[in-house]
Each structure stands twice: as structure tokens, then as C-alpha cells.
Length: 271
Image (cartoon, rainbow, N blue to C red; front, side):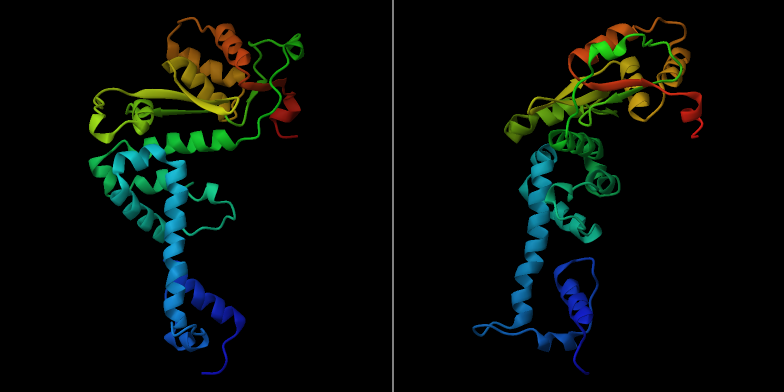
């Protein structure tokens, strides 16, 4: 075999360090220098172990509650499986755990702990809310002449704002992350929770929502106009009045709304 190209060497090193990169010819091992009597291939194992260790560290920082529920050993094994399934393509380790909720939906742990995917999703929302770049809050003066009844009104929330609905009491589980595991005793049966996540200064808060304000927030955050969201909600409410002004006043007072705008017909048609 002739001298390998730089690309071949890079691919070989990748195969030795990353669990998902496959395995290439062992012939290239002779090109890795030994140092102080330690073969080059053996030295590479330090980086391979470091890849998984850094993944575990990044996951532990973003998913404190998942870590607490599983314990150190099970969480380390989860990190190994996750690292083998999802390679890292980001320079910022804060993004390393973005796929954990998706991964947990098919992981064996979820058979025993079915709330894990939703708990991970909540914690990812919390992590992203903490790092979000907030916008100036809505200026009430900008609402002059603005009607909540407008079909083409569009509400833009702060980047830190998110909602999640779960069949499990995920906020209770998340809040128990600082308590000793042997002291945690949470009733999981028939206790669904709808959660609003937002940042208040440097603190990320999680608050429970009733069904209707959750549905409205979920629709607006998904990009639907106020008219579309309210029409869907009114149909589901079977004629019950919608306290829109009360909800919006509460959200505005907390600085959750960045701006409100009315789209033209041309904008709505993509012109």
C-alpha cells in the first residue's frame, strides 16, 4: 500500500474516534507515531473515550432531571448509545443533546420510564430558553388601533417562549431533580400537564397551563394567525367565551410578547 492521502488518514482517525464512523483498514495504523513506548493507536483511544465523555457531560448539563431519574450508570450508558446514534456536527456543545427526546422514544429505557421523552423535551426547551436572545418586549403604544379580533393579526413571542403538553407530570419530575432520589415519590397516573416555558431575567420558569390558553399559545407559536387560532379554539370550546384580553394582558405584562402585526392579504398569499 502506498502513502495514504490526507483524506484517507482523516477518515481513518474518524473511524477510531467516533462510534458511528465505521472501521477502515488497519494498514493505516503504521502511520500513527508512537510516543514514549505507547503505540499511536493506543493513544488514539484517549480521544475516542473523550468523545463519549464530552457527550455525556453535555447531556448532563442540559438534562439534569433525566440524569437524576436514571442515576449515573444508566445515564452514562444512555450517553454511549446516543453518541453511537448521533454524531456531533456543532462547535457548541450546548447543541449536542438536541436529539435526545427523539432518541428516547425508541430507547429501551422508555419501556420502564415512559415519561422520559417528554421530560427530555421539556428540559431541551428550558436549555434553549436560557440561551435565547430576547427581543425588546411589546410596547403597548404599538397596539393603538390593533384588535384581537383581527383575522390577519399575527403575534410574535419571545424566542425563549415555548409550550409542551404531556400525559405525565413532567414539571413535578423536573422540579424533583435536586431532591435525593430515595425521597422522590411522584404519582404518575392520570396526571397530564401542559407547560409554558419562558425566561424571566436570568431564570427560566415553567408554569402549568389550562387547556384553552395552551391550545391558543401552541397555535400562535406554530405561526398561525390570531384569527385562525381563535376560530379553531372557539369550535373546540363549544360556545364558551374566550377571555382573550385577559390572557394577552397577562402575557404582555410578563414580557412574553415581542410584537403584534397585521398582515396584508398579499402577505398572507405569499406575494
